[in-house]
Length: 171
Length: 102
Image (cartoon, rainbow over the protein chains, first blue to last red):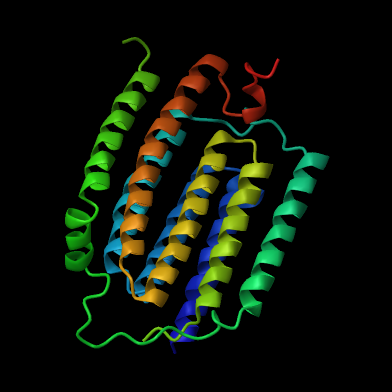
């Protein structure tokens, strides 16, 4: 049962990610962004399977909610016509890039599947486990990781200021 | 629960990362390249969470949280850069942006 769910989510994730980059769908950036939302929702389902409840919620809220809306907003603001983008030319360097990425991925997957230690399923969690809940991860964030957490808020502040300065016509 | 072996998760993460990398290498539309980068970050998150589940260790979740926060910052700044490049060049094709090339 669980493996069936895994396969459904995995195939959905890969298919919608491929739809983001492959021209029939990816030619129009709006279609690409919508495929990206679908991919993020499938990924959130996979995170729930990994008992990462907080990260799954953040995935839907921040990625599917905020980031993709930002993408769509910019795409529609720019109002790019498909003629503006020019015709994609398959060049030799692109072909070499695809072959190299494919080769490295296949070698990596080969090593992953050969390793005996990775072939066993993880130990089951006790039924009263608090693994991955908001409470436990929040506790970690506000105790061991308090300095990085506060630095993240500074990073976001800097990013907001930088984005405004970049995008504004005249300061 | 979770009878899925670690190797399956890692394989899925590798495939997703590969798809994202191919998108970055082959597409010339800056917006699509950006979306591919988001895909790559998500693949890394998936692998982190798979290891966190395998080891029963929540520190991986904290790292995934930070990755999501940094991705949000990166998306805001990157899209602002794309916007201002578009104002100058009237194009989002990355091959047109070559002021530093010569």
